[in-house]
Amino acid sequence: MSVAGYLLIAIAKVLGIVINVYTIIVVAAALITWVNPDPYNPLVRLLFGLTEPLFRIVRKILPSSFRQFRIDIAPIIILLILVVIDTFLGGLLFDLGRGMIR
Image 1 (cartoon, rainbow, N blue to C red):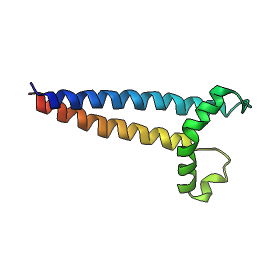
Image 2: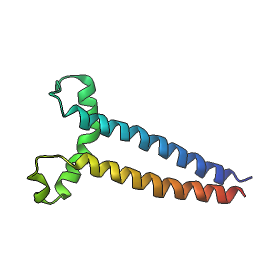
Image 3: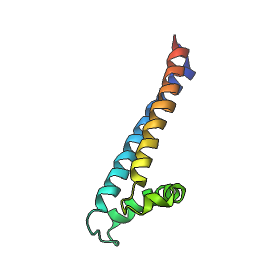
Image 4: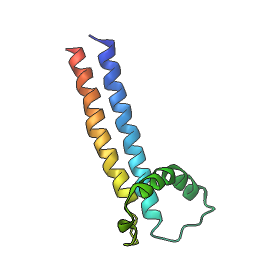
C-alpha cells in the first residue's frame, strides 16, 4: 500500500476533472459567439475571461491562411490539446500510481 501511488491517482483524477470543466467552458464560449452576446453580462465576461487568453495565443500561432476563412478554429485546437493532455498526462499519472500500489 503506497501513499505516493494513491496520491498520483488522485492527482490524475483531479486533472481529469479540471480538464473536463475547462472543456465545457471552451465549448460554451464557442457556442455563445454564434449569437450576439451582451458584453456586460457577467456570465459572458466570465467565459471570455477564462478562454480568450488561450484563444489569443492559438490565433497568433496559426498561419494567416486559416484566418481568411472567417471561422475561428482556436476553440477546436484548444479542445484537441485538452484531449491530448488528459489522455497522455492523466493516463501516465494514473498508470504510475497504479504501478506503485501493487
